Length: 314
Image (tube, rainbow, N blue to C red; front, side, top):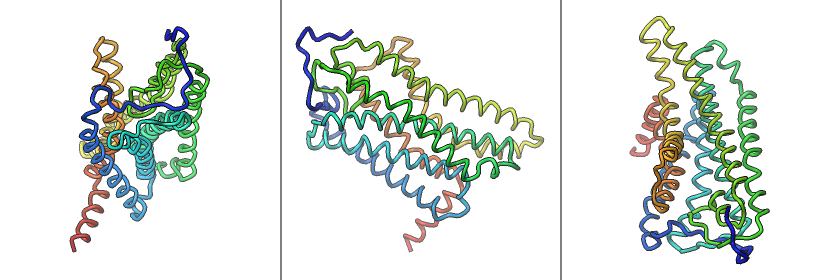
């Protein structure tokens, strides 16, 4: 229960604190965040360009990878420019509608990415377990339907967030102790019982990350069961090799969530400013590393990048 004892007010705008307690160091934090953003944009646009121009990559696995790259670009762009405005120009004020918009789109894109990773696990399952029907099952129409389902689920699950916050009437303060508008960070400023909001946040996690992680794990159990039934060691190695990049990306994406959940259950907690830095890195690192992982581990992408670099040198 959060009460204001009659002193609550309805703000016309919110103030983003950035990293509380470390305001003097904001300009220095901006440098690595900006560098990571540039690397993310360049790497993901390069990946999209290669997939577009290389006809041999116009197959389901790489089209899902293109969806992932677009989602990653959207996610970092919805966070980093606003964050840099706080760190470099002290532009902390954000309108209520702008805050609600960011509050919707950041988790929306996060849930989208989780759904795309599940779709990529389905792609690997079909490729290994039903190789002769792979192209038929994952035809372009099926890919479009999968993309629409992922987007529809994210919209249905996240739409209540800004609507619930808009109904909040009175707040203790307008200062959000974050560098972006996070749902629970705003709710905790309100003069209301937050139990409903906590339950909604738990529902979002279970209905998105929880469900996706379960089915990804199930798909890999079935993949391993199918792979180890193959007659030769070479065939088993080749089949598992096609899953390597996806498994690395899945670990990058879900490990912090699992670690955070386990840490909370064990009673471990970080200082608020450290928690905010970790949260920011969590939204930045996977989008930056995803194209690099696929670029290093996938020969078609690696060879195409090498050609591009060779042409540039010439």
